[in-house]
Length: 330
Ligand code: CP3
Image 1 (cartoon, rainbow, N blue to C red):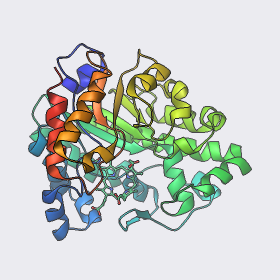
Image 2 (image 1 turned 120 degrees about the vertical axis):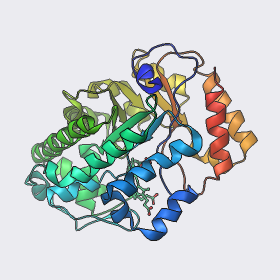
Image 3 (image 1 turned 90 degrees about the vertical axis):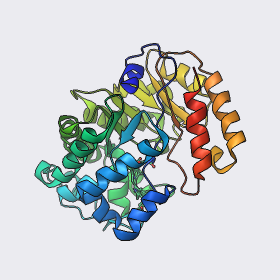
Image 4 (image 1 turned 135 degrees about the vertical axis):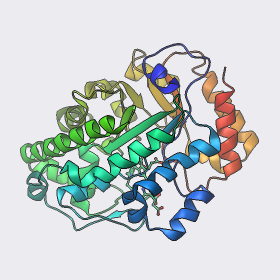
């Protein structure tokens, strides 16, 4: 598998190609299915979720599929109901509430495992299946805030007020997510990715003291290669390896070689085209993809991806141009 080879830093004729949020609303066939089924129904029904997982791979010939689910989906199996409107929405919890959450009940996320098994059975042998979860800090950010936020002050202030309880709460989430990822691997995931979407909000010290160790605990002992992704975290790149993932995902803010030098060239890297490039035109997309690949041409351990999730308004012809240009990179 090209994806596993890149994570093992083998020399390849071209990098593996996939992109975050590849199963989603920019795709007409996704919107078609979502007309018939709510997001909750689509994620909870293995046949539908597996179909959505496969859609972008069929259309673009990608080297990896990411299971169709959400970072907030497993929280229901810890007793926290979450609605999608379309972002996650829930009754805000206190830090004490989070520290007392029960461990994830794996029987209640069996639908995710069935989705993985169905998707794995349909995928070509050389296409990797990616499982995922939210990192403890990012999950806690949503749990304390009750939904999305620009600055997630609730989690940041709670962590300062009571660092000991915050660390305890994060480690509880880490234990559950570690078991959730291992179950995904057992169900057919070839690689797992941890999304720490809001880790970039914290200081270097808080990352080293609490946020990073909780992400590390999530990955500890897993039996498949792992990727840790945190956007808007240029100030933390030197410390990414403390998470002890196999590879690291970065956004577009720094040139890819600069980010790679900071993380360390011995670690595989994934990224990092600006999703805004996909709102231009096929010629511009091709030029930008080629320019990006020229900066790391030939380096073992690069996985082509966007620097964050694809924007829903991205025209299909631009996405096709991106994949074609990335695959021509030999
Ligand atoms: O294709 C894929 O990447 C797999 C599926 C996936 C979804 N969410 C589906 C989804 C993945 C990997 C996620 C991760 C996720 N979810 C993250 C981490 C990645 C990141 O973007 O930083 C976060 C922070 C969330 C929380 C979340 N869920 C938000 C903010 C939203 C609203 C998104 C938006 O674009 O409006 C969701 C809902 C959601 N999750 C949708 C999808 C396809 C849109 C649901 C719809 O169809 O209405």
